[in-house]
Length: 379
Image (tube, rainbow, N blue to C red; front, side, top):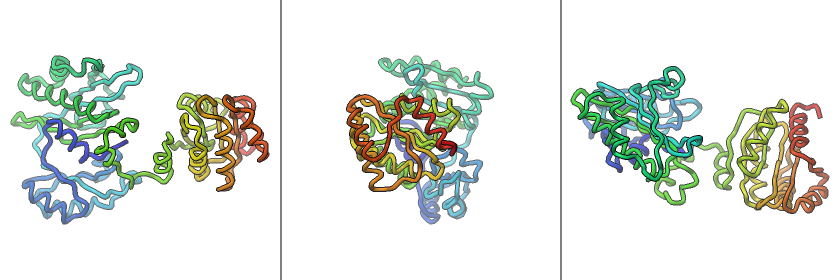
């Protein structure tokens, strides 16, 4: 789950990381009042779940409350990469002498969190990684040890030459890791962490993504979800506990299990097709999940064929088959459907489908090839 910058700033502040004064506004008058309470120069920043806000005109300095009102009025309602700005941060501006990047992310290949620091703060870290990867220093973190004081100090010394300031940077690194773990984050970054001419260290931007699977023990963070930035499909998938990612292809996929879903998408590409989505109904035998999954996929105008690929372990094939029948009873689907069911109660599932004149494919390769051909309109 993504949270907004102002929410991430609040979390970092709660862990003792120095964050300039800020508040969030939903209209220009409110922005002016916040600027007045802060005093001096402020920065007005759009709050949307995309990068590139500055380049899009969504980040502006304001010298006084009246200018803050004008800036907020111009930014609110702005379209940034398809998202409408409904909130802005009004934050105290600080003088910047040096800018650093500090981030912690789950590295799935290393099977542990990795802390990354760079002296190239304030710019797109993906660009730095692509063009000058030597400027990024990586440190795998042992989950049992955590971020030790020694490791934080070593990382800080790689980017900050002055020992006294490096101590402050190291303190931020340690506290960022505490926030990362304490919030069940999959990503926590400060870009930039700035050093002022007077030697102060401030986190002037913050980004955090939270592991959806841990939200049950993070009720306060779960309340931070901005549902206004979800599509209907994303909202339905979340409410039905489906793992769903929309893609650009034309073969819709309903699969149980992330590994099987990835394999299915690979096979679709292998046979010359393009998957329209990743959709994992999980290990449940609930027909309602199948109904919801088909509603999501059939509603995608790009989808020209639907592939249902189920390996029945915990998931019972007959329940999935009932879900397919129920979904088609509730809502006729215009796209052709190819079904492959194997495993628990497979024979019963085939009987249920046969009653609706559905013939399940014998193998996964057969099913994928049929779906790709149907999407091409050649079957």
